[in-house]
Each structure stands twice: as C-alpha cells, then as structure tokens.
Length: 191
Image (cartoon, rainbow, N blue to C red):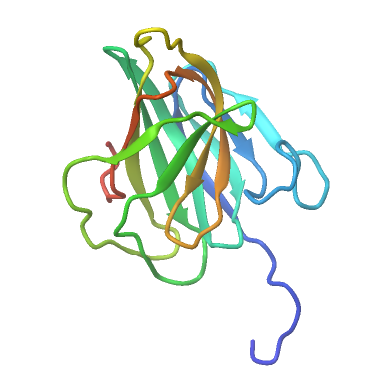
C-alpha cells in the first residue's frame, strides 16, 4: 500500500518440525530483549518435546523475514548434529547461498569453539516466500585432556550476513576449545 506509515505487522509462520529428545521449541520474536520474553513484554511460549515426533509449532516472523528453528538434534560417536531450518516468512524472495554463523550458549555466554565451514560450496538457492532451507551444525562432546564438557542451553544463529541473531533453546553439551562445523544452507529436507 503506497504511502502507508508505521511498523509493518509481524506475520506468523506455522511449521511442521521433527524435533528430537532434549530440543525445546520456542515461539516468540527472535529479537527479544530478555531471553524467554517477547519484545512486547509477554512471555515466549516454550514446550519441550520428549521424543522424535513431528510437531506443529507457530513461530513469529522476525523483522528480517527469516525464521530459524531447530529441526533435529542427534548424537553419534562423541558428536552432536543439529539440523537447523530457515524459512522465508517475508513477502520477498531472498537468496540463501551461504553458511549461517552460529554460537553455542551456556548460561547466555558463548561457548569458546572454533567455527569451521564444512566441505563443499553452497549452491545458489533462491528462497521464495514460505519456502525453507536446512543446514547441519556439528560439535564434539567427548572430553579432551583437562577440558570437560559444559551444559549448553541455547544456540545463537545469524541466518545470513547482516541479519540479527535468533536464539533457540537447546539441552545438550559441548567441549570448549574444540571446533564447531557449519554446513551451508541447502534445499534438502534431510541434512
């Protein structure tokens, strides 16, 4: 609408997610001033899903128009593998041909990990409104030398360069001082 002034209302995206044990789904704006609250002062809605079953979650679309969710958290051979999904909840087409930036959080503080982009080049992806892409993030959980794992309660995700961070709740562990492997966004449903 030409000539319209004022803030644009936030859209709501409804996603079907496959959520694994220990992952908490958080519904609320990603840019809340205090974790667990919404920008309007209300509480964010959270629900821990105890088993790997598909669930429907309503996620408010952040101002960037890109909503990030944690689809699945799996573990194998001393590693954790988290599948992230980014949905374009805006009215515009965007490109998703890069790696996200991520940081694991323990009590709101970054866990010191060295980011490493996983092998392979990201393919050009044109992300139409309502469409999504996925990527996998990998980190170690086995103690190294004198370094013990720490409890991780969240992950900060910067989906694309210039986009604000979105914070997702997690319940896992990580070993400080190790690497965190980050895969590029791609259109596959499985990572």
